[in-house]
Length: 129
Image 1 (cartoon, rainbow, N blue to C red):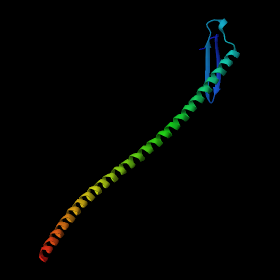
Image 2 (image 1 turned 120 degrees about the horizontal axis):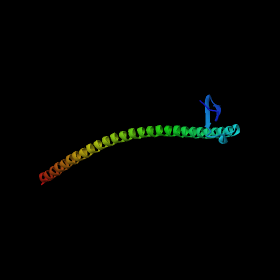
Image 3 (image 1 turned 90 degrees about the vertical axis):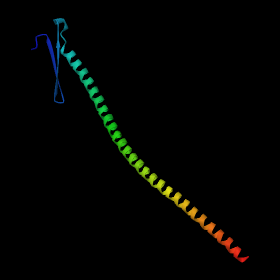
Image 4 (image 1 turned 135 degrees about the horizontal axis):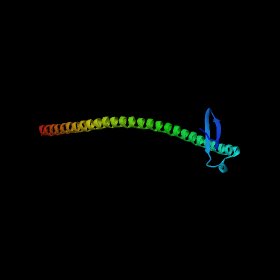
């Protein structure tokens, strides 16, 4: 319960009632109505400033969340691309190995063919003599 020395200020702010109770120790410290209104006005300004800060932080948070989601998506795309490049690299490595083997096989085959041709021509030239 409020005593005779209590000063009460009520303020309605967007369906929220703010009740300020100032208790005085003695009669000399009783706060006037105008001072209570002034303090309430000051608190209202502070509340509005805090709400503005909160809104700014919520907007920044929303921006950061959006940026984070975009970065996650880019990371996913980059990871997928990296995996595709790894697969393509492996396919190219296998193709290269096969080409090296084919080259070695064909070189060996050509070398044998040249040796046979060389032997045939030297045998053929011996026949002419």
